[in-house]
Image 1 (cartoon, rainbow, N blue to C red):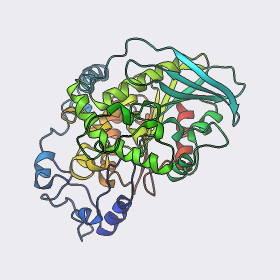
Image 2 (image 1 turned 60 degrees about the vertical axis):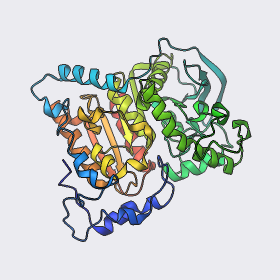
Image 3 (image 1 turned 45 degrees about the vertical axis):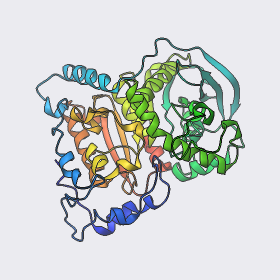
Image 4 (image 1 turned 120 degrees about the horizontal axis):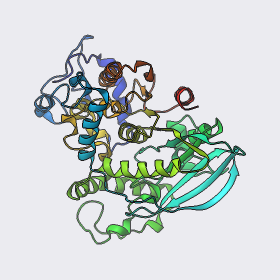
Length: 434
């Protein structure tokens, strides 16, 4: 059913939606504000949007009522089961639906470069998965430290920017790419948080994931396909991309290509979340096997698309002892009725909403610690549904008798992971991993 507790004022709603007039992370296109004003109402105690208005028109309220509430495998619907029995059944179903492609062996990791920068020992790494170009990654740890360290897999964001990957959250030279400097100023208050976390005593690995950075689809990979706005007329090569304008053009092309990629993955019997999860799990394995790392003290964290990746990896891989998704927590109804158009295909696992609420993917990790960080004016979600997801996760952790291992914090402002949020995240990691 639709969420009858959702409440907002017209002024608050327009404020929350205003960021959509410009480019937003995970968005293929921004929609005009007039569209969103269809949801706004004059009263200060509204309980429900107009049931005839949604991003799928008059089908919205009908579609929102199709799923069971709570979903079939929610812990909230299976309170009489033991935690282990519930988790075993739920994980089996989610893994079936996510359908990660198999990666049968750990690839050889090549150290491309090794040096000291910013008080850190840094290694630029690469490895070859069974699909696509080699994965590039960067490993950071405090210089001179010999004892095994707690470790965090840093998960980079989407940001509508597929040309870049790990360098969105890590810096390895005095002259970083100016586009990435601006990216960090916009979303991270100028910080390369992977560096800051490593300097505070962690080993950190950040890798390019499927379709980003070194793993991106090149123009020439699909040369000869002449259907659609991005394929006809002008022949392009990835080697020709160098200027900010050319990178922006590539990112627009890659955004449109997501539709094709996702449909093709479905035809292959897998999903985008499944492919991303497989790559993140392999990176976690590579991190855990390093001699500088204590494999019993592993965490993962990221903003936006990195927050999404944290939900799937933290929820489905029990090696993750502490998880911090940032700027990515809401309900399926929020996506269905309000915000699906602002998001990447990386989110969607068909039929999963019948079995778990979105936040309950993260709930699969109970009683392991989880900190969720959200922004009240986040352009990608509605505040009432973010708050509802918090209520759901609180209930899940309460049922599991692990309330102290879960926390959500809401910050003022739009979609971001600023210094204050980073400090809370680092403190949470310290509490559970150090």
